[in-house]
Image (tube, rainbow, N blue to C red; front, side, top):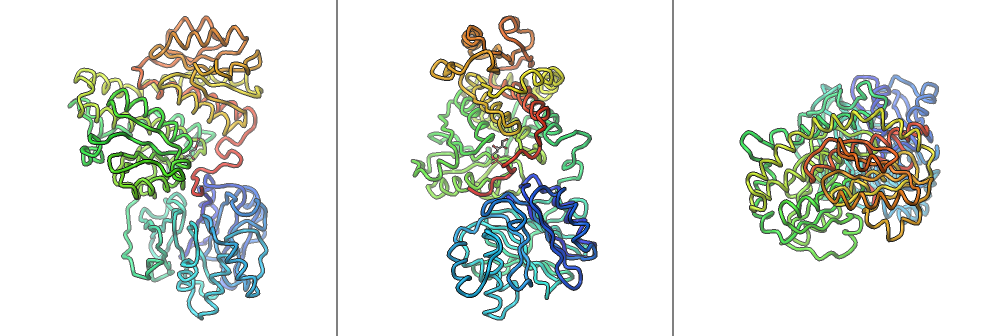
Length: 615
Ligand code: F6R
């Protein structure tokens, strides 16, 4: 978590860093700070709260003349969110200043040593320990900042992306990464540093992504020198051209990123199968799958590892892979898998799903699976992310940047990629007849337009949101392919409205949750025509006879559920395995509207951050 940003060049650093922090605020937003070198000294301002709170203070506290600076937006790990714990942090002498994303696990023992050596600490953070460790090494050895950073980092256990500068050497910023992302934007006589490319996209399309265990000295006129932290070897910088554009990272007329991203889903799904689903030729082409077809076909099973919404997409894929390709699937929380000594070997294919490609638990699960000989395939959204690089092969979702903290288009595009893979494997294995296969391709191709139709329910969903916004609890029920959608609907509501919600397989209701039902309990039931329809209708009857309030998500034209439910929201008809791509839409809208009506910060819900780079 946390967003870091830096600038060194010929422009004023302050506005670049401030704007960059606003773009990175999705990564953490409990405090923020900026340090600028103004030609004589470091000007530092930081505060608990959002970047907007910082902005108010900055006008008074920061000189705007400097051309070197760093900034940070925080998701607290060590030390509560307050002004003192906010970044940047000074070293004891006041010469060095640092920003850090990650966790220094051995900070307590390092701190004890530094205290013995006379260092004092103002904050509770691991970061202040790191900057003083660097200072201590620098003074003891009488060496330059870059070398001191390298020696200090070799004593550190944990994860980091850091940027640090020395006010006595105001022509360089030293950066390093291990486990947390760090990009360097390369302009003409200027350099940008950031957790992702969004803070510098309007200045340059050229970027270097540091690899784990690399550090770089970024010099004002001399460029970037990259070294391996462990063995000091030089690394030739690899400059990539970014595909990202400014429009993709702005709200484009929507009030919130979440709403924009919900509405982007028809386009995002289309982008996901563009160039892969060739319906005229009746084929699916995915390089990562074709190149590793033997591994997939010989696999004893597929093990999916993921967290949160991505885990829900994995659960949907369990149904898809098993039904279409007849491959057994297990879906694991990455955080449990990594610590469980799982039985896994070279006959398993592991699919790691992650929007950000940076989730620490998923990354650790991948490393574990690789160490046991499994072939690991990544499904990521962020191009060049750690997970995309750590996996043997993979497929990007091509959803475009997802900035709202609540995942929306990432979910539907993950399901789309996983469906494409399952269909391709089904064809190769012969578990689907060629006419069934073609039928699936045609239906998949129709999904973007059907999502557009599902989005037309928005105004009606808003009226439902208004009726139930003050409910204390919600239940979400679904069966088969739509059981994971029920889980996802409940998660969406919880995370942005702070209303307690639970998702269940509809038939499980009788085994406990039914006791919760009374006239105050809204229950969202996914009851599309395909898949266990009659069974779900029986569940609805059971709810009705206990006076629960029923919000049905139904196939267009459904009359039976309409007669039973308090409200029905229609989605277009499709084949069963594709229904999650449609039934998810009203659930996203419902949580969005309820959260908004309750005055929540939809894009930045409390306690959360977009990329969970700590375990
Ligand atoms: C929920 C949400 C989280 C993420 C989870 C995994 O809306 O966004 O539950 O899905 O933190 O993140 P990724 O997919 O980036 O690995």
